Structure formats: structure tokens, C-alpha cells
Length: 18
Image (tube, rainbow, N blue to C red; front, side, top):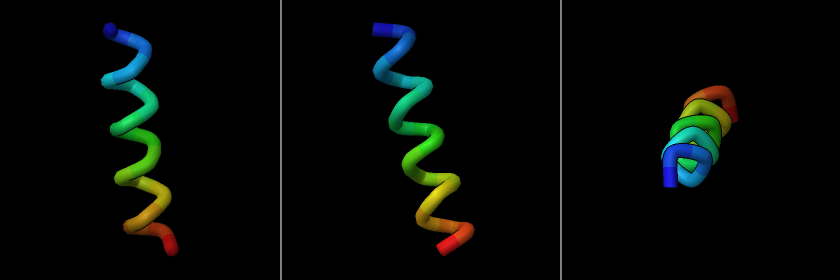
């Protein structure tokens, strides 16, 4: 579950970068 949270956080960061 912790890994999933990390993936979601990375996804949000990628959206911000995009």
C-alpha cells in the first residue's frame, strides 16, 4: 500500500511537471 501511495505522488508530480 505504501508503494501505491508513492506511485500516486510521483504521478501528481509528473502532472505538475507536464
